Image 1 (cartoon, one colour):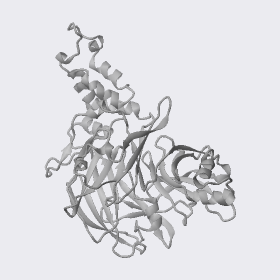
Image 2: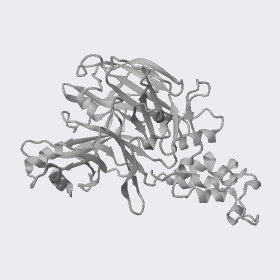
Image 3: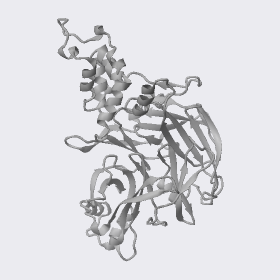
Length: 476
């Protein structure tokens, strides 16, 4: 708190007559108590321009700690980023839909299309192919391939602050046609001598390390059992790419390119990557790869005992907890036996402990305008039992609602449905264009800073200018 009170009186704001404004007569500690109750970080950062005193108070790590602590129970604003491709050889088209939980919560389409919301990245002016590969909170991992060179370039950026960091290039491997990408961020205690600095660094997420993990597809048939994988990892602490061979200690098949595994995806949670372990078209467990602590081998956690092992699953994260969502929609003789199920991982030890959070059968669901949408899409006058089975087979999981532990977003046709597993109500929230991939940007109480590279590392391009985005268009 001492650093808050050390502000030069010459920096206090005065009116046109030179008299001190009434609020400037308040001590810094009281001014801080007022400012950290502002409704959002955008307003807080805008108030930095009021005076040098306010700039000093709002920029102080202690203020950011208090601000984040005060807003941690508020509803998060989030944005769905839809992308039409995951291939750098195809022109990328992106559509944004933002949700702001205010007095009139609703989804709003961003007027910008294509890659306009990333126009602050220098690579866009060069017209190189660009594709979003992963996200973490409000950060994006963006990839581009230089047409005249045989290497990839990766950018880490925050679309809200317009800050970005360019990673060292990595050579391409023409023999590998498929790669799975993971983006990990792990808060850690900084090396400061001050206990308060270390605490503030963790609370504000200003000090953390990150990794970009590229899992290379085996050259052989992707459906074969694999007990070893070739992995390329970039670590922010070394500022280098390294090539590793990761093995399974129990000789399990942990090939993430199996169809069931690809459907579930590669999910980052708690500084670890997770994907589905499959053998003989049956789920055998979930692979956990922790490159920060053990980059040579993966570990396995058992599936929930009531999981349907031959049906597809989707993985996701809700408030730092790994979750499984399973949609079972095809029963030959009984449509209403279909169900939505949700599990949450409570403990990684002892091969994992899962807890079923929700299970709702179709017979208990209130589908609202979903069936009406299906009639319009397929030109049906009436949806019978068999048609319903086929319709629900086409639904796919998008994401867990970041503010509601019981709700998930589902994709169906040209619409996004919000399904509440507690009430059993499913409703359409908006229409969208066909996409291949979707990312969810969740805005924390204070923007995540683009992680800096080590001071002694070779310098690559970066941009962390003043937050002039706060005065720009309010799209996010």
